[in-house]
Structure formats: C-alpha cells, structure tokens
Image (cartoon, rainbow, N blue to C red; front, side, top):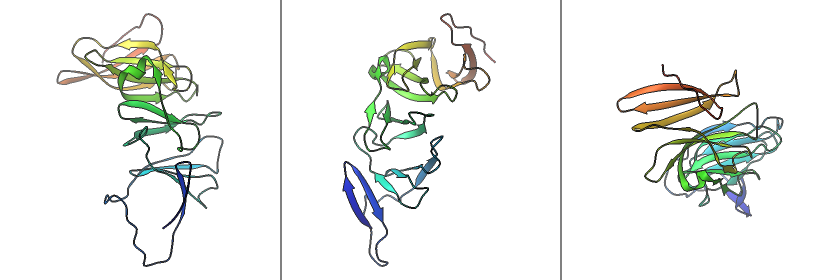
Length: 204
C-alpha cells in the first residue's frame, strides 16, 4: 500500500501484488457508509481504523487515521447542508469535523463537562442536535445544540432518580416532539415529550 500523507490525512493506492501490509494487528472492518446530502460525489466510509473518504464517487480515497479527538469513535453521522458536518461519539464526548474527517473538535457548553452517550441530528434542521449527557455523579440530561453540535447548553429533559436515558430522537412528524428511551431498574419505558419550557411526559 502506498501512502501520501499531509495534514493528518493520507491518500492511498494499492501497490504491487505480493507486498505485505502491516497495521496494528486488528482485522480491518467497516462500520457504516455516510452520504452527505447534496454532494453526490462524496462518500464517508467509517472503519475501525479511522474514516476513509472519497470526493469523486469512489474513484480515489483519502484516509484520515484516528486522532486523539476521535479515537475509538462510534455513532458517526453527517448533518444536512450546508455544513454537512461529520459527528461522532468518542471518549465520552460529541466530536465533529468540518473538513472531511481530517481535523476534529469536541463539543462545548454544558455537555463539555458531561459524559455524552448518544446524540441525534435533526433532519429538518441541520443546526439542531440533541444529545444525552451524564454529569459526574449526577443524573442523565438531554441537551440541545443550535449550532450543529458545537455547543450544548439548553436542557430539554432531566431524568428522575434511578432513571437511565439510553436513547434520544426527534419525531419525524413533529420537530417539537422528543422521544427518549428510559431504563428504570429492570424495565424500559419510552417517553414522548414536547420540547417546550415545561415538558409534558407520558409513559407507555
């Protein structure tokens, strides 16, 4: 494998047959394929050794190995246009890249001091992201970002005593309805809450 590296990203092509490739000993594996909206020639291939991208519909590829910011990243998603921001959970933080996975930043605001476990990019509003945070020694929160995941400050929901929030999404039919999966002891409940200042709540 021939590598040409610059700014943390590497363009690669397959070299002559018979040469051995050496890595970290792990078997390479893909996790997901992401296609940025409005950019039909761009492809993100999420792997267990970083993110591989193509800007020419797969004819050539650019490899961005994992940095400290996105090491062991998972739950990769890409926001809608115009940002087409690549996001992930890594080291219990929401991280994001605006340059095709070469450079990464961690989300700030209130979520920056909490362990992030899940997030959801709102399809109808690319600037809006909701995420689950867990303060050290505290209770689970659902927080909102209005700058595409760069900062999270508004708390939409606080879990009760003994509750663990395991998933969060915004309803496809209503951008004002937040769906939360909550674990209570040995059981599981789903909660639908309108994202107003005073949250309504119903358990199934």
